[in-house]
Length: 480
Image (cartoon, rainbow, N blue to C red; front, top):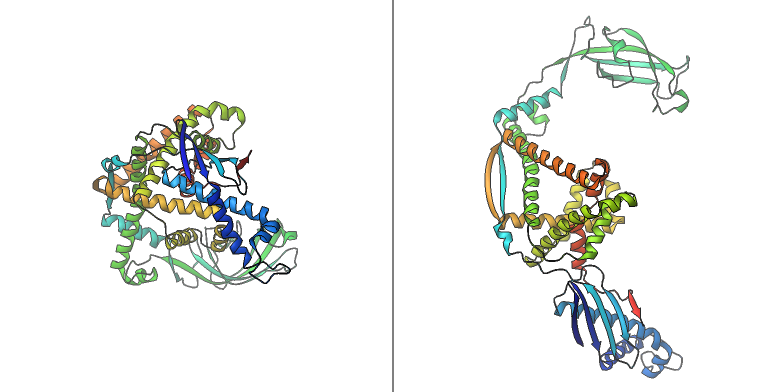
């Protein structure tokens, strides 16, 4: 194989590849030997058919299959030996080919630019840990206790008031006729929450244990029996008991009900929880710091085809006129994102960062936990959408890269209070809102459209996918 690399313009290259007919013949012979073991031809024992007979009967089909393999093998080797990474799908143009002929073809491509990541170690970032005051932990526990009220049995002559728990049996009718689901036993209602039927609670204020009470209420729009929707129902209620709320005692028993060993263990759990809430947000700030620093790195030329693809994504949902007006601004946004993606990917490759199957499955499980009750739907989505799994792999890959950059960069570690953390996060949010406002002004878009366009960008995942699959597909072949 002979390879000649010709620089056309900037990152655009033509790679001329010559494969002599002797090499092609060896590929053909190998294929003939392979099929000879499997085909049955009349007049010949299995595996004994001569090459000439096989050639007459299967030659054209075998040549096409062999040609496809040669193109894949030689183009891959040519790219690897010359350390060329295509930005997107290369185009392949066959000049001469055929059985008993030399093969000559040209790969036309845009090359990914060479990236110098040496300066990553000089990046300066802030990394925060949040010190949680014991008073913050106590306040969170008290809030939890408030949302888990205890009720104690009231005396028989106690009249129910808002906030009390009323336990009742009922029989309901519409136009004096019972209906499906018209009976209830030991139904518990906290008066004032209005969680049963609108206006039902108020009519129970003042009832006592053993009272009989007729309550009227309109059946709602989502009532299962469609013919009864918006009809007035009468509920004949027997009050079983009235219970009054009592302050929850924050002690070891309370802690055990929440899954802790004791109160001290609960305090530690809540403290970690609050800490994690802030640190997760602050870690995102550190990540954004890194990405902003990477945007300052210099890359001489960004592949135009990648810019066009990114602009197309940013323009989704827009009219042609709006897209045209926003083109210049979107190109600048696209260049920043592509540059950042290229740098991250180069750093990942040089540090041999990989995403294992176990790490990918762990991320999928994490996604499942975030949507309780919809686990099967989420799992089905990933099983039926390989592109979604690839995008998830890209997310994990990016996180691993960011974490390694944190380790290698110059980190300014800061321990801050919860109040300081809130100030930092608020300031960051204001800056983000300002950036979005500027972007909105420049592109003359509504805030909704801008946010939609920004959220659709998947630059990093696309770049990592492209560079990991730098193959030449023989399906995109121009045969002249």
